Length: 57
Image (cartoon, rainbow, N blue to C red; front, top):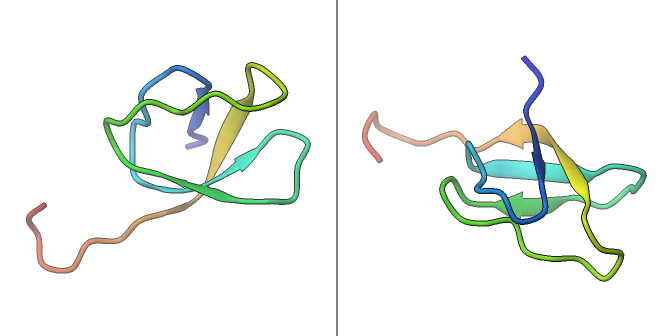
């Protein structure tokens, strides 16, 4: 399952996201809004979901 999020939306899951057309990665926290970028609206794809120890968050 591919997870994507755009600038201004809330991140559906915590993890490392890669902006479309870029080589960098950024960390987003579940439930927090994706911040604006210098280039305007950007789409991000989840690369590596955060794993939580234990079972509770």
